[in-house]
Structures are given as C-alpha cells and as structure tokens.
Image (spheres, rainbow, N blue to C red):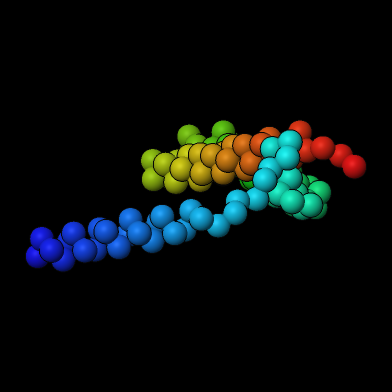
Length: 108
C-alpha cells in the first residue's frame, strides 16, 4: 500500500512539473491578455448592469420586509432576510469583478 501511495504521489508531482512548462500569457497593464482584454467592453457593461439589477432585487426585498415584516411569521422574515443577503452578496461579488477588470480598463 505504501508503494502504491508513493507511486501515486510521484506521478502527481511529475504531471504538475510538466504542466508548468507551457508559456504563460503576458499581462500588460494588468488588463490585457495578448491583444484581447479579459473582459471586453460589452462584458463590462453587462457586469455593471447586473450589479444594478441585483441591488434592485435586494432593495425590493428590503422594502417588502419593511412593509410586511411585522405582519408575517418568523419563517417568512427569515426567508426574506436570507434572500436579501444573497442578492446583496452577489452584487458585492460582481462589483469586485467590475472594479478589478473594468473600472480602470484602458480605453482605445
């Protein structure tokens, strides 16, 4: 069993050493890969629009909680808060993507 594990580990090490030999694309200004941007202008616009839609969805759920939270059950409130938190976190994640790959994207 020990020989099998050693053989298995050595094969993984060998494969990972071979995988590092391929040329890596150079990033110029941190945003280009060769001649193509990692996210093009349309992808950046879609990302920005998506952040707005996600924030709008979270805001709508927060408004529902404000209006009906006192009248509804604990389960309803818990579900609504979970949905609002989910949409808010998703918007934050997409905002990070937009900030990193789109906001400082050089213009032609």
